[in-house]
View 1 (cartoon, rainbow, N blue to C red):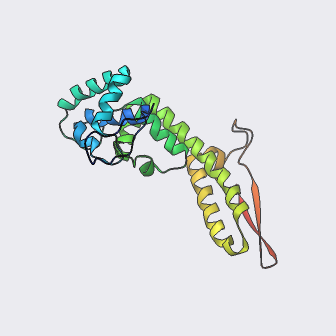
View 2: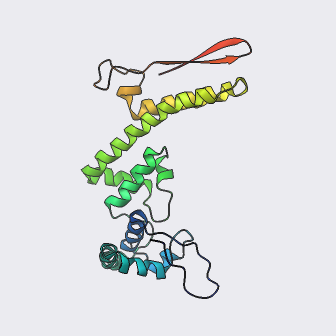
View 3: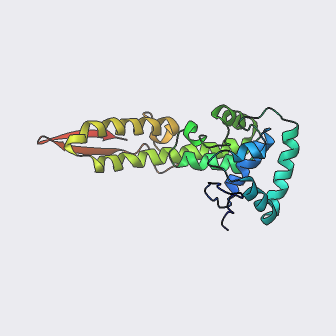
Length: 213
């Protein structure tokens, strides 16, 4: 369902489609002590008219919004949210799996700072498990990128490709040391030991081997 436009003459704001993630961000910020007016001033957030329409169209969101307002009255500090919510936590994990750093994953209006995420890891075991899974999937993604970088390399970009490959290998090894680390053990339960890949980049008539894995 499409969002509704901002009321009032001369108002310019992009329409927003209702999403569970965006609704969760709004509730988190209100629970942290922000006002709906302040939140809706952000260019990336919907207008107040839209949020109110969402609360009528989606009763579950309306109930969460009302509860967030109650919590916000007891937390008048404002700023970025510290209250844990599974939908917000899930959005952060999705952004990590997509390859973002934690700071990049939190770089959206209404999302918590990275230190809050670390606090969540300590306080909420279910989020700690989801975070570890997200990091493991991120490691697999980084290792896959090694081949993508090698495929795209040319003689002119060979050095830059090597730097990127080493960076991707290093992060994969840090995120999943048993699978991709320098001391990966054989028979780790994931189909053998550390994967071994040899990439050859042709440069000036010579084969220059870039060992990966």
